[in-house]
Length: 318
Image 1 (tube, rainbow, N blue to C red):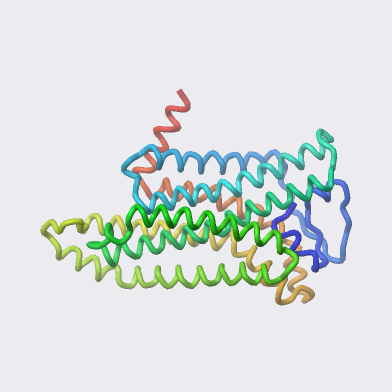
Image 2: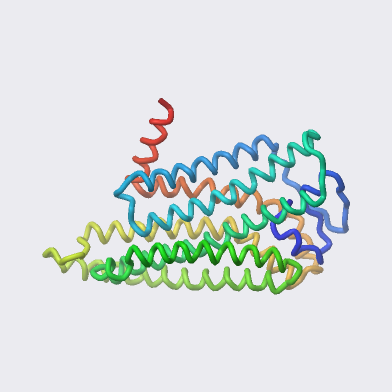
């Protein structure tokens, strides 16, 4: 079972799918498989799932973390959970099929393939969207500090969260329904590039002018209502750095997948492209790595979140 396996029907490539458990056919181009014991991969999926659940619970429990940025981070963690759950389900089914615990059934395989692909696509779209939302939140925090609470209201934050989830689910289902068309791939690539350009523009602007803006805030020495102190301004810039790390990890882990999609559209029969297609399975491990490393970044960069997560783990271990 592989994401966008249907989109690759026009390419002469073999991927490991649930169907391949019963029928593996060699083509001109054969995927080079990086063998990882299913038990190890299953452990990584569970670890990722537990980590991200811990993040969501910690943010919900600690009222000091009830801010727009952490609301978006909790949604980002929920998005990573979709990757964990989809890979967990896929691995479990493969194990059950390999031990003949369940019988191979083509309609069931196709249905499960569509469900897993939809979850992965939904995770991809929501991750990009919430990274963009966090970038906008950091931008407003740094450059419109004195008006932040009037711009980023709770109503707008909730509306943005609901809108992103609804739109992401709708887009994911649409992509799977029309997966035979390359237009779907082009739309996904265009969305990826658009979000990349927007976020890079915001982050470059933030870091170029952040120091100057911090000086302006520092000049507001006497308690301006709803203003931020220099210490708070530094904390907001620290938040921007945290999200820059998350953005870098995301593009590092998902970039090869988008390059794969780009090559499918642009040069499916070129020798270089066909050689690159052989390593498609690497994207599985990169996605899980992204889901595992994100919670570590949250905890490493936020003392409050780290303290809360530690408290939850200690309570559960008693």
